[in-house]
Image 1 (cartoon, rainbow, N blue to C red):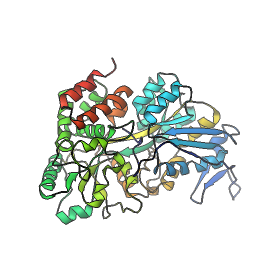
Image 2: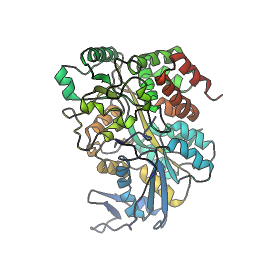
Image 3: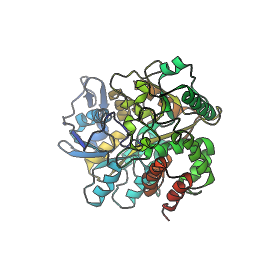
Image 4: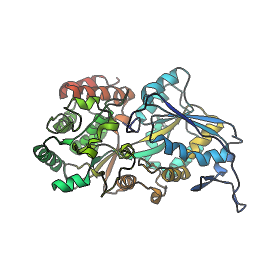
Length: 455
């Protein structure tokens, strides 16, 4: 699952609604073209937005699964556009985004723009006729800046949604000092990872090798689907992974069963989990935001979670190779291959007013991608924009993620559940994995998901 409600130390209830106060665009001090300042850190050319007419006083609503603490940098990144155009951006983040967005669309209460973390959900919503095709200005930006991701926002040959953020999921969080104290080395193969887990379990006493949590409100279960996808890439390879995602092989194919069994060697092993929380079943009731925190108090050693988890460590936590927490690459079956699982959001519009088109254009620009990096310091600031300036990334995890996404030796694949039909990828796959954690066996779990695939 993507970027969704995937973030926070403590869960917030309800919805966060924030409005940016609009100000008019000023002129540059040297008398040249119009520019706007975001605080004292950025300036952009306002010319691309003047083509949409006088937008001062207009409002654009944004609905997303990105909640605190990751929402604030997003909101701050809009300021140059606000300064240029005078448009007010009303931001609303919700933990129930995936469930509530279709309800709002059906009820005629759709936002102007939604950040969709699943291309499968985009496909479902396109079929309702509610989503507007992306304007040509956005398509031109994506062709220039994010061509490799354009297909994810395209349905039946029509381009609808530009890529926004990007993340790497193939990471394991750990404490470098805890590893050093025990003489543990970062594993370079899957077999090494399992052997290290066995060693930790034998030596750890009350300290478990792993901590995990898959609770996420209406989206409960998605972290477990990420486990299966990451391991499927490693055990079955990219070609079989693609067939699985496209249902060219059934969900209960032997290749999928093998991957699930490998995941079970960790997540369903009481010797290995759930550090700081309890037994295997506590994984289902532990929020993903809280799940990695026992690394800090020494009750678990490792937590598999995406790059955006950097925003969930308590304020002041030092993140880095020599810090309190850091991340290593989830190893493949052998050190010669490097599959990388990732995800991202896509900007889909339910309105085609000029101010909405202008904001879509800004979000697909290099200027926004660079502003996003400047306003963000807690992690999760990488975008899909290949022309963004990587030197602006402040957080070491973002730098690590950017390296992984651009590594020529890596084989990148998008989050499989996000590409599947919404009824499966954001439905039965989540539920099936939750039931699996609670006690359902492998075969029954895979059969349940397979039987739910749309005919």
